[in-house]
Length: 326
Ligand code: SF4
Image 1: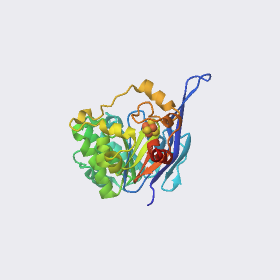
Image 2 (image 1 turned 180 degrees about the vertical axis):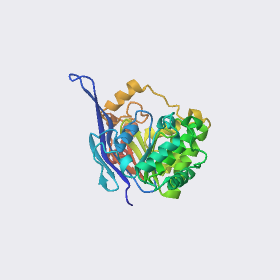
Image 3 (image 1 turned 90 degrees about the vertical axis):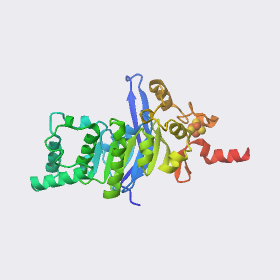
Image 4 (image 1 turned 60 degrees about the vertical axis):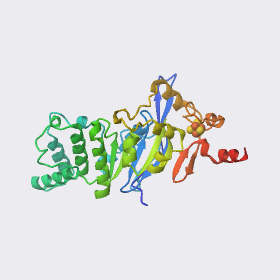
């Protein structure tokens, strides 16, 4: 099947400190994945795993250290704002930060229509804006002339989605789009992505720390840990039968009943994160309940398990044959 977006061996190295004692941290380490038309692909992991750096590179806010970003078969040049020029639109985390509190929200819509020459006159512009608002469950009448403060966070996030639809994008990049929205409204926003996919064939790169909504909305998922994709495949397989010990740990950390405490797995990122990023072998070796000697020395390679890929020595060919001999 055709690939709408292809990420090929993408790497981002950040340097810190002075000239004399420079420290390099590989925030995104040689990751590859693709997104197909009309597909919702989740990039998930805890804070500091590299998913937002990946999103920033795809959107052109950060240049990759190496690797390629290919959009509809064409390589995207470094720092090119694909989300602005090539049918990709971005939905950001904070719906209140997206709109200036002193401007009415409809002005943003008219500006986009004008910039992209999407309508011949004001009547056509209103028709277009109304159609996009209706696609997210709102209408022009209930939004015209209002300021951001007159809407709830959930409504404003719907409004940002409607605005992104004005240019008929093929792909939405949604970076933690529901993390600042009231818990009771989160499902309605992720449902919206499903509807856009089903009704208009829009693909979504859904970047999240929330496995519950990722499970609900995505077709495929990649789990990131310290810059690596450690497991990737159909969401049903990865989240219902996780193979990587880190995915298993994440999955266990989702309590069933209390949506407010969905992410109760807490670590001291400031120290541990750094140590894990710098690890020579598997970056999860310091916390993995199934760690082996080889894990501390060698970085595991991707191994296919069912329809998913797992980066873990437990599934590597050499380990499997050793286990058979024993
Ligand atoms: Fe655990 Fe080793 Fe697999 Fe890493 S490679 S997740 S340490 S078993």
